Length: 294
Image 1 (cartoon, rainbow, N blue to C red):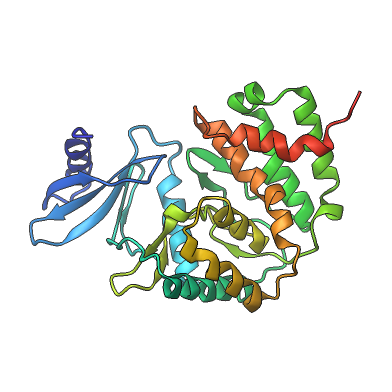
Image 2 (tube, rainbow, N blue to C red):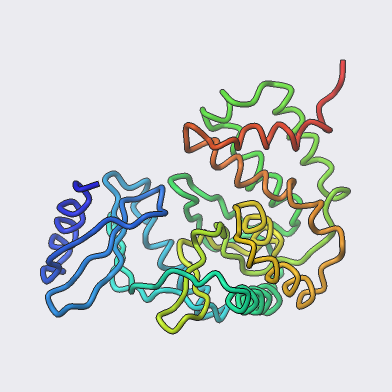
């Protein structure tokens, strides 16, 4: 990815950060070009840039989400240096230490976020972005309606999803959505990160848990839990799930609900990536009980 360096430097210089003298690519991101840029004074910043932005406000929405997690939820996030149409510049975080102590601290962080930010409605005051697709956050009073309409069924219009799921699969998803009140417990809305896969868990310079790349909204806390549960957390993360359950009073059936909640992220992956790393197969497996037998 040698082409990353001149691309990022060009965007930084155009934005007025002319003291950026070098850049190197960063791993993990899928929606934008990302790297670490070194400035003339020896400090570094994290940089994300779009070659073709999905909207005028994608990075502004991300910056707002970082601020909400930090200011409303008390979660450590990178500081926003600059947020423009095609460029986002943040303070540099460090790779997380995969120790039991770190993951236990993250359990406390997420539990405080989810239990301390309850909201009367589901949604957010603006749409934001999940990867390069719009996350619709229209306010709803009913969490089941919100999750069905704006987190599951909204993906059925995407071309790749239409190609991956046949008519019976799509009908099964609609039946599952109709039955959500039977399948999931009634839960309040709270502020959620919204894209909490393991790569978005980082650490502050002093080693505390920090989060990046949010797609925030007020919705069920278990949406965050499901995302982390199904994106290959390391063995040391086992303590996170145990402690989080204790701190939030999760019932014993929470693991059984994860495949239904994770449908949202699997559908988002199918919509945006080819190959989809098995996401379509996971969707079909979860929908299998809701397919009508001839």
